[in-house]
Picture 1 (cartoon, rainbow, N blue to C red):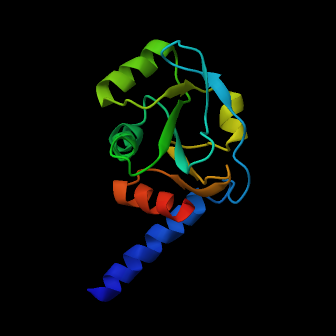
Picture 2 (cartoon, one colour):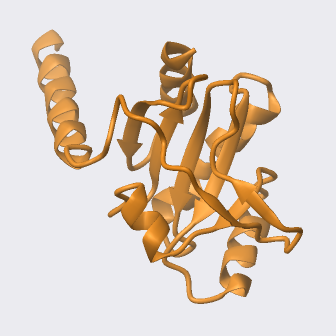
Picture 3 (cartoon, helix red, strand yellow):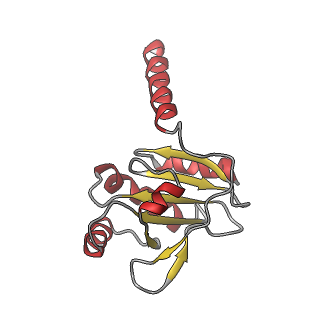
Length: 158
């Protein structure tokens, strides 16, 4: 039983390492200002002064739909200081708004574009970055993440 658990853990670690091999870490987060989905103006991807999470999603992505609520809840509960979600790979604003309405996300939603995806090296969904209080990328991940996983990565960044 122990051996099986070790093998499973190693497989997950290997897959995670392969998925994140081209994502930046230990460098400044890209300066990103984008239009807000609600039309209220322009917002930054990163909030200075506290550690937080920048989460990239696509409205058609199943894993985004099932994991974005984890970040939203962690921020609502004060477990993570701030979170920003950035829409990529969408056909129009209505598609993104429908996704947000269906998932109940309350975090600010920024409307990304191909240049945003390139600047942040996003090639799969969901992709998220943990940003430390100095604006440095502390951690990154691709795919579904539990609340515990996000909380732990955030805790390490503080």
